[in-house]
View 1 (cartoon, helix red, strand yellow):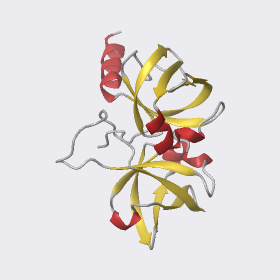
View 2: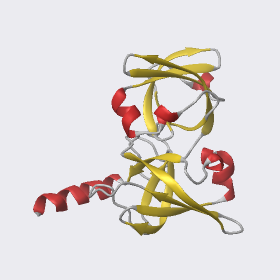
View 3: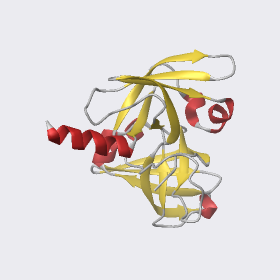
View 4: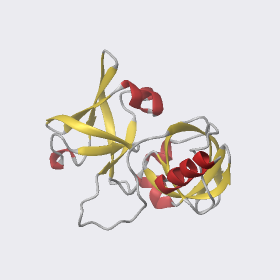
Length: 196
């Protein structure tokens, strides 16, 4: 389980295709703290560390993960948000994040609010993909509060700290991001759908 509070950034060093799997090797400031079999969220996608060498480590993404997330669009040199799973003794600073990306979205607008930035994202309409104003959403692994909510889009506001310490600084109009909708909202939507 994750909280959506990003620890650091990682850089893509190599990408190796093996059948339908892709092995990503990253460098990060926390590589020396990782261990094999550890779960780490990459842009919100929970992946298992399979090897470590010096300041780099490797994870493997299966076809299902590549289809549902933006990881298949990564190139060498790209930057991803990193979060290790929450320790049982840690504070729950964000919201419940499973690391199971639901879908991707496209950035449609970035508004400079003179102190913060409002990002508008558009996603496929789906009864499971529910946002509510002032509810939680995870974008590239970042726990955020929904500002505006529509059936196929939503917006979030980013403070300067988040812009500086995550890959939000690289998101522009047309960028593809990973979304994990609030797990409580997904369960409620599922229950309501079975009653119809």
